[in-house]
Length: 479
Ligand code: NDP
Image 1 (tube, rainbow, N blue to C red):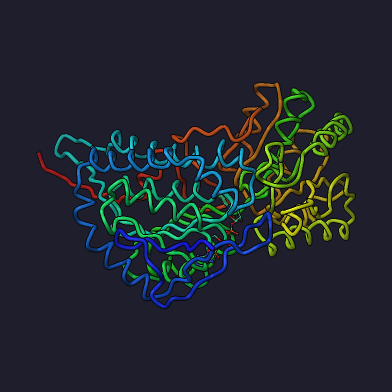
Image 2 (image 1 turned 180 degrees about the vertical axis):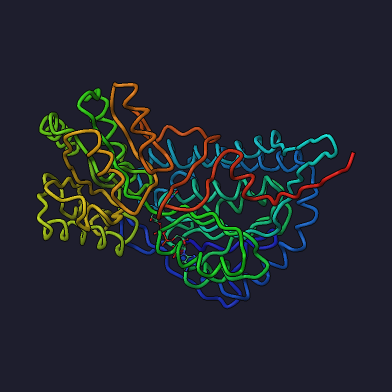
């Protein structure tokens, strides 16, 4: 049994109250490690450590902060295979995906913000009588709370810019996927990150997560997770005047116009629908197809979906691993049942999978494609966050835009067309924070990342997030 520990004041340590949670491997359904169920005592020690570290970290030169962060990135790179295996064991995703996406991107996140900070500049405003310049100081102690779907990827996406800007961080990974955060703590110790600068507390959202949000010495919260949790966090943090960045759920449309390059559109849509078991906030779960090509798209799409192998994340040809937990697979399955009740027709998938051998008790589900549902039904309105997509047809551009915009969410949209003006026109008309045209998940870390409507508040990435993690102060000098 592996024991995962908190990382407080530069050391790995047990929770003060000695309470622990079981950690289950989704592919086998078996407990394989335990993690701290942290409490008020742990956060109090972490806050004191962060307070002690705050001044020297904030006043260290950016070059020195950057150098420590680059060492952390190197530390992950040196243990790349171990990190990738840990991520797959903990989350259920195929090992090749942990390597190609999660761990590679975690390294890239740290290197990106370690170097971006060297280029961060603030503004100055001149008049005939004054010079104004803006100082950008770290906020102080900030809280970073991340979900289970892309564990180290999203954990580092928050922590790296927070550290680069000179903040001390209290961070909580999801209780469902705590493994790589603990390995990350080991790397931070080896890389010489000063004690107290980063503190990682494990435990449940309702307990330690909530204590982070409420703590009066934490002045900003960067949160990625579900919309309901985000609203709850905002209701606590907003009256305390904390800065808030909320990256929340989605119900993303993929729009296939009649002039799309169908071969590319279909193969990419199979990926955008089912990568990481559909457990990516950017996955397209509502596929909207022009009625003139609907049948052609459907036939070829289903053919390719049926070829996706579901099973052991550690087998090289597995395309769909295990869903993250028993609770989550039950939720996803309940949406397939709901879709049938709502009149949907399951074109492929819909069943739980029980691979033979070590994974027979794991949480596996066939990739599922459903048609025949209205845009307003619950299946097409609520986030499912699993390997389940629906197909709908549209007859013209206006209808496509209306269907795409017709949910409370606005995270990411996908457009497939070879018509340049249409691509620009539709991109502008979509109420989403991110639009991909003829591609999916091509990420440039300099770009603003985030959603509109119930998909979130604020933007991560690029200089946007460095502005989030700093307070601007204007200094006005009379000439
Ligand atoms: P949750 O909202 O359940 O949890 C997210 C994190 O918040 C976890 O660490 C969780 O802890 C913690 N948490 C839960 N309740 C509280 C609370 N009351 N106070 C403080 N922290 C709390 O989301 P999931 O982990 O289920 O992640 C899936 C969701 O994340 C989906 O809706 C998905 O769309 C969204 N997401 C959004 C992204 C974006 O960029 N917009 C990217 C990736 C995912 P614990 O797990 O231990 O309970």
